[in-house]
Length: 118
Image (tube, rainbow, N blue to C red; front, top):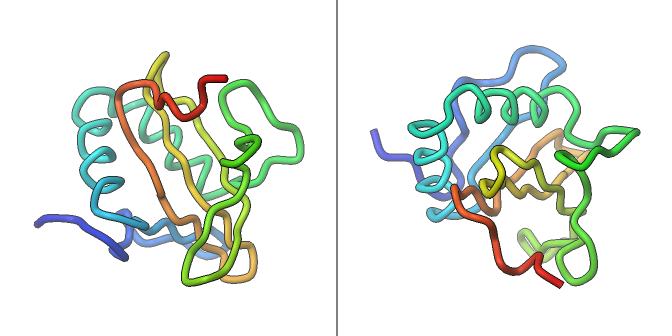
C-alpha cells in the first residue's frame, strides 16, 4: 500500500492520542525512508507526536521551528510548526492543530533540511 497526501500515518490513534496525517506526498516518502533506516528513532518520534506534540518544555531534539518556518499553512489556516530530530541529520516537521488533535507531517527526511540553516 502506498501512502500519500491526507493519509493517516498508521496505526490509528488510541483514545486521547493525536492523529498524525501526511500533509503531502514528499512527507510520506520521507517517512517511509526513515522507517526503513532508523525504525526505533522514527517510532520514538511517532510516539512524541501521538502523545505530546506540543511539549511544555522544548528540547534540542523536539522544538518549535523559528523565523519563517515557525508557522505553516494548511487549508488556508496557520498552525505552529514543530520539529523532531530523528537522527543527526534526519528530521520530521509537522503542523500542530490543537483543535482537531491532529499533527500534519509536512516534512520527513533522512538528510538535514537546509531551510533551517541560518
